[in-house]
Amino acid sequence: MEKGEALVYMNYKLIDMKIFGDERGKLISLEGNHNVPFEIKRVYWIFDTIPNQKRGMHAHTNMEQIIVAMDGACEFILDDGIKREKVLLNRPDLGLYIGKNMWREMQNFSYGCKLMILASSYYDENEYIRDYNVFLKTVNQNKGQNGQ
Ligand code: T46
Image (tube, rainbow, N blue to C red; front, side, top):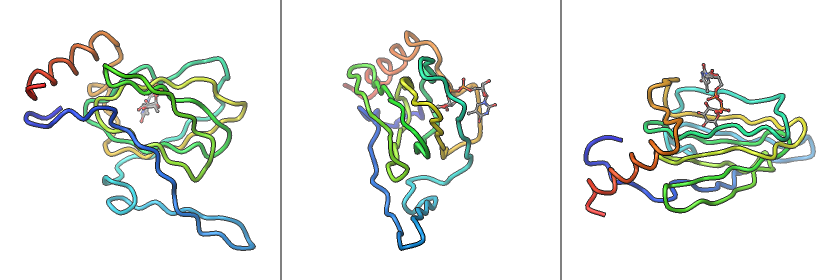
């Protein structure tokens, strides 16, 4: 988190994406800094997931993302250090935006679930927090800095 940057609680939102559809099928278009609220630096996808295998279990200090279940479904647990909420991704026209400093866990993957992720930064393992206690400490420190 940059100095002076405010901590945003439950820094995520669900986005219903505009579908261009006709008798031939459907199409969705995402553009950086237009309907995606950041410049897209990286795209990756997750596939061959295993239903009872959790993924994620980390937060990002310096990355924003949009996640789409292109096929199948999975649940995201989102946690800002105070509150935890569960979100179901189960449609290719539903985007999950996750901002900085949000702990995420992915669970209950359906068979064949495929996730596509647009990210605001290049891969950098140093901006991952993979220990929940370190995450709590970091967000609590930031709250202190923001006078909260
Ligand atoms: C996230 C959720 C939704 C790379 O080398 N480059 C990359 O761009 C990424 C994303 C991963 N990796 C390597 C790092 C690990 O050795 O791929 C391996 C698996 O990554 P990870 O265990 O972090 O995967 P997930 O599914 O737990 O988390 C991923 C993303 O890492 C993360 O940004 O928010 O998907």
